[in-house]
Image 1 (cartoon, rainbow, N blue to C red):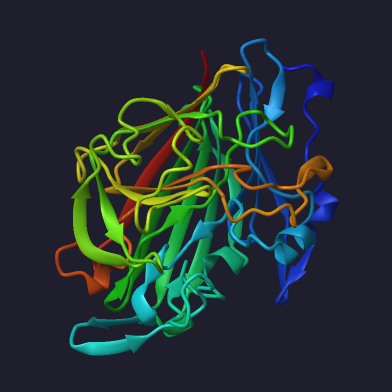
Image 2 (image 1 turned 90 degrees about the vertical axis):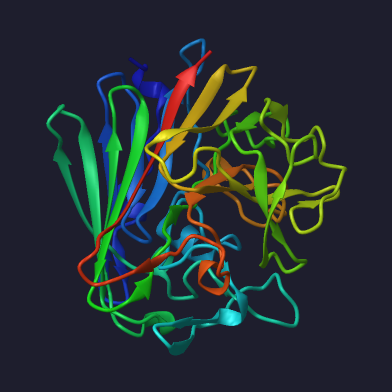
Length: 367
């Protein structure tokens, strides 16, 4: 168990106010080993995760901020958020479903001059105030259920959608994220968590020394606006190949069109091996000095890997640390991006009477 002084929790009073007339607050989960995780219902965000290193020194390995105001005004808008209705990009914000053409809001600043739909739009799930309730599961573990109703027409999407995202802090030091959704009309759903991790734990350093392994032999080819071309490409022995553990920064000066930007880094949709099957180990991250390690398990087909190369020090996070380029990394389990516009991609359509389900687990260990 940690000494009390090692863990400094975020303050509830820094989150307690209203957004669009709805009450925002902070929630805290603990397990029997002393791990602590905190969340806010603004965007159903995961805002901290306190885990030990190999010397039992505790640190917060999830990037974020000390107040709601900071989250709202950050240049990087998605820290720790649940992203939806559809994560990633939709080409020009348009798609056809059931013979009907839909136009979504266009908010992606990366592509020029075309503006695509990104992460559910400017009023997407990451910026909504969710309902939240803490309870115990049958194993006596603390869990937090966030709920949201997304109305027909929001950001251009059809159908009234009811969404539940449940975070469970396991006694195996794992964060289990379980998603479900139901609709009253055909719509699109592809949810993910946009948490950024740095296993150095609040030191303000980058993640270029983190060892990453991703169980994927292929990726989704993208154009220079990060829009999928529809092709699935082999990445064996390429700079994108993480089937054996590699340091994030080892090949950062190489390039790969639409996926690895020279001197900056990765924004890659990996096609996971064994895709479409049950929960399985999909990726690992390790930082040698601390011995901290993440094992990521998911039942999704893809992981988006991004080493935060757009961070530029503008955003100042917890403890006054600026978030510099490659200050964190995201591993976002999800379905394929731009799926409604790519006939060969697995569908992300949800129909009335069906239930969307997804489970992703981030397990924290030491080596």
